[in-house]
Length: 318
Image (cartoon, rainbow, N blue to C red):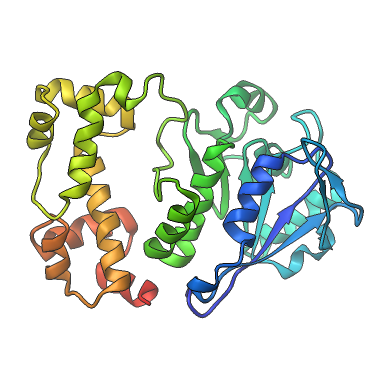
């Protein structure tokens, strides 16, 4: 899909005892008008009936259309679910099966993966949910390739998240796929959240950066301010006043990946922004993102994103 010539139609599901937080995440990410971004999603609220539904906190939600109208949409968002013990009605199961069959995407937030898994579509496929529901999910759906303690995952156009703030991370991931890094950064800045947390990152970290080591937090900020320089992990460890081995261990336990791989990801994120918003050559971008050479940038860019910088620019540039 070319982001700037299409506005994907998004259906946000409602149900009784709707999870207000995850519903709010879906609305903020996909239904909030963003005129500054030109083409954007077109979102509606779909219900199992035409009656308003009650959300947590006693909030009443009006619906725009019925689940039977799902054939008109490109993506469906399931913001949580009523209960792990409640099977979705046949009308919803049929709608999800039809959407997947015609190539649509289904995004399940938190407990919403229980509704999606009830279709059988996730059998043999990757899925996740909130850590507190992991045991229950694997017992009810043993055929699903459950990914434990990750923020979000996806396979075959079906995506699931840990729920709560993980719902925002997955939503930003979907926006990044459709609209590129720059526009994702605009939305993330508006929400005052990180524009990109990798899906494989752990859901829960026992100690914060400052609790674990104040210098580690400061070092990460220092690196982000100096991505144009050819920094390496040894220099990062020195900045944190730690041995290379201690730095690597603390960084992995806190961030969820090695310092080297994290650094490459940050450089790639910056390169994506340059490709979308400037006319800089690949060599100039490589120099401005610390990769130093175009060959080095192309190698890591293609490895992580599956397409070359030139193809990425053609697809996402403004």
